Image (tube, rainbow, N blue to C red; front, side):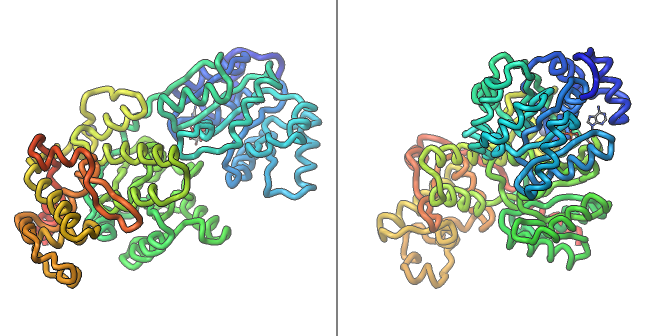
Amino acid sequence: ATAGPAGGDSEALATLHRVFGYDAFRGQQEAIIEHVVTGGDAVVLMPTGGGKSLCYQIPALVRPGTGIVVSPLIALMQDQVDALRALGVQAGFINSTQDFDERRVVEAQFLAGELDLLYLAPERLRLEGTLDLLSRGKISVFAIDEAHCVSQWGHDFRPDYLALSLLGERWPDVPRIALTATATRATHREITERLAMPQARHFEASFDRPNIQYRIVPKADPKKQLLSFLREEHEGDAGIVYCLSRNSVEKTAEFLTRNGIEAVPYHAGLDAGTRAAHQARFLREEGLVVVATIAFGMGIDKPDVRFVAHLDLPKSVEGYYQETGRAGRDGLPSTAWMAYGLQDVVQQRKMIQTGEGDETFRRRAAAHLDAMLALCETARCRRAQLLAYFGQEPGTGTCGNCDTCLTPPETWDGTVAAQKLLSTIVRLKRERGQKFGAGQIVDILLGRRTAKVIQFDHDQLSVFGIGEDLSEAEWRGVARQLLAQGLLAVEGEYGTLVLTEASGSVLRREREVPLRKEQVKRAAAAKASSG
Ligand code: ADP
Ligand code: ZN
């Protein structure tokens, strides 16, 4: 921010060498930086780890004035600022963690033109005081990080981001750069509209992470499955295991530790000191596993994360991509592994139905879940499916580095099985007026005289025991796939299985139901034979 008039890319390159110590720009960095340095607006879509920070940090250093960085990640501001200061960059932040005096110091530095970069939380910009402060200093560039937070369709929506459209009105001569790692085509458009950046040039990097191997397996005994995955493929590697609840985070971390794998928990229920200590250990040590809720990971920059494992289904493809994207930033082979089962689908549908939010919110959440399920159940290349979601195409037809490419899934004609399962639900409804979840339906199909089966006389039903040709795991797989295909639905807080409009066509034999063959049996058999 001390340099003269907006220079060309040579000054940007000199800054890259001198300040950051890097030899060359990566990907589209150079084009983006040149565009912003010369005063242009930009919307940048670049995957996590792609190098977005330099795209605004260098313009902030090259152009006169202070670069204002709007970021929702308050917890990371201190780290970011410390890292910049270590490079000799004059950086500061203003957020709610500071007391009055600390804030005053930073404000004074800004007004004196001593700051190259100033980080602000979005809610700050709703305060007239902040806007007033900004208008009394000199601003080189506005960077809007995590710009997808402006999208009401996205899973990270932050109402404070909507107020950012006024930046262009108040500072028409200051270039703006909006950055995100998470945007479908629709979100991209929404960013442009809501941030009022119609003139912005769009830069879009490929989302493909060729060194990440994507694998999604049917969930049987998730902790054990995880343990064999780690022992067989990632002994001594650093990695992240994501779980949905704090409780399962704790239990899984304990389980791994008990089985000789060093693991620490991370979730919002732990005190700040413990969280910080675990995060620091993860960054510092070579082979630590962090078991975490999605509270962990935003902005974590560890290049040698060798695997990311999901024990529960993420709520959206964006979330899945962002979380798995923390693996293999160094470009070396890494694995994104997930175990997913019927209960995940039931639970998430239930959460959407009974959770907070209006009808629109629910519809969107359901659409996100459907896209995630489509990725789980696809018989085509996972990478192709993932990239297609972001509106991109893979370089080649098949990637050769995902489970469906490596072991193309076999399908089988599940029409009869689907009819058996659906007609069991019909019987239950007709004869009892009661509603039951997947467990009861599977018990009936398998002809099990459990207490609950006997209590409701379900052993008297004509469908009792008609499904003995399949195992319990297979029946759960059938139910899960029917749910994913919309041939079955979940209702109410107990996860009752109910028919959909489309179910009728299966019962009337008007359509066939191809299903993926489950890997559970094969995996179990392989294990048994290997001792
Ligand atoms: P993002 O914000 O897109 O997730 P970062 O800006 O944090 O990514 O950059 C990811 C990592 O890549 C950081 O360690 C950063 O220092 C490094 N990096 C970025 N650009 C370059 C470059 N041109 N040369 C070398 N390393 C780079
Ligand atoms: Zn593939």
